[in-house]
Length: 205
Image (cartoon, rainbow, N blue to C red; front, side, top):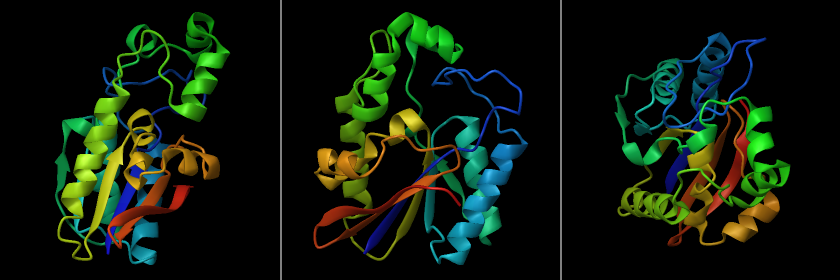
């Protein structure tokens, strides 16, 4: 059985800071809470015998930092491998803008459709088919030998929400879970009997 853990990076905003929509062109580091979330992820992996054999991140420092802290906390020293396919999406004119400004431009319904159905709002630079295909190809590659490997991917919320397509039943997944991953949270997928199943989503260590 191959196990795939998909985690969202830790928090990049300190208490009292205005929240903005951070995408591919905004490369913030973790704040203290984010580092604590990363450490909690590592402890969870260690305590639940989910220590990864291999770790992938995006090219953004918030995902790399989260992965390195988590891996160290889990008790191993595995390297991390950044892959561009796991970069956050580009929010176009809404990149790094406060959420009230984003809603004023595209409307609350567009945000709701994105959060519940992964329907891309107007102006965002996102190709859902490409992201979905990237996840499917990656899942196919790591499950090719089905050798009991555990793989950790640390990515961002916009990209992670397309990962459940690897199950072949995105609508079924959506009926059971919210698409959004909270900061520092993760989901678990298992490959066995020639298919992927999700056994947990938005788990908060």
